[in-house]
Length: 559
Image (tube, rainbow, N blue to C red):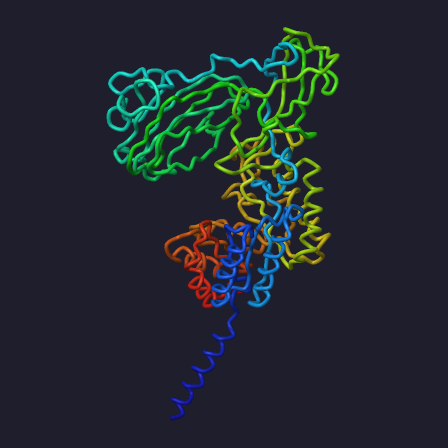
């Protein structure tokens, strides 16, 4: 009897100990894909919050365009207040995500000219009447871009194309123009699923080019495996994505790239990792273009000189500002470029040859425009938006949205700077600004730009410079939001060794929580993991209840 009673007491003690075991203090959800543009957004967000709160979720990270509050309507603030009230009722902390540099939409809503700029240097112009016009080099083009010249499914003028007669074919039945097009299929016959064509082209350094092709698809899988690429060495000068339909009629795809310091580029189109279906390509063109999406700020000056370089002409005296009336960093411009309009009394004469330099913005993938981190006006905007954030939300914690900064070091404001120090200094200034307006606020930042195992390295997209060591330039009291689908053991360990607290941001639209379970195992072996965030990109919240339940059963590593 005494033994049974003792075992009972032991069981009760163990149960009490288990009940008292600490859980992760931060159990969050990333509320992604809503901008509070409609009352329907509010209702859907509230459903996510209700579902999370019922399973232990105690924080919600939101963007909602909260770093452009000066542009918001009364209806927006009404919906924001409704979300705040729901969070308060459910005891969920509302954490704003603001101040993105890599995805500069909030700041670009204030001033689109704060986009990072790529240089066009000494492009040739000639004065014709009351304007100077850009003179493109017509010899820079794709040979046989209409795919009219082929023999035995081999196309003249191309450096290579994958498996002629097996993957790549000359198709005279389906074409956009002329008598033939390129057809790509049977991707599974290649061990990598490739079906591509490539041509090497000579270009002028620091010039702007437009690449265009007509594309047709039939049951193409996966449709997002199609790309056009412009490579120089191992660098992609035009990192773009196109949202093709698996089956679709002829559609024109167009993009801009800057040659930077290169004299030769390799231009590709086709499938990387294709699995099935067919793709047609036709009327592929390359052309040098003049001033399009021209930036105007202190770090992106326009320079107009005589052909011999002896005379520099003056805006407002000799010519009007080189302004693109259709400037939009999110669009691919049409036309040859805006002319340089002469002013009355200009020193420029008809027939005179000029060298003109400017900077243009660059669209990355399908919607990304990065900002210049060295332009002073950027921080004036951050200052005002932090004041408004304090006025309308006054959050206890803020996530700095400093991920995937894929451009930098190319305009006059930031060229030649230590990019790691510039990036870290930008985050430090953001944190200082936020704390000035919200004393005591705790700050988090996305991990990738401060992680040598992720994006904190050299040769990163269109960045001129090296992000290595960026983690040495940010405040140690930041919590690092380590993100990714598969568990990142060396990434978590790196930040723990550097003395940072971390938040594990995982899930990423997986079919189950197997990877999340892997993150939990890693976290139990890692110091200073504060918690987890359910992080989707496609409004997939079906597994949020199970995610919350997992966290309530998990326990942090011992200090």
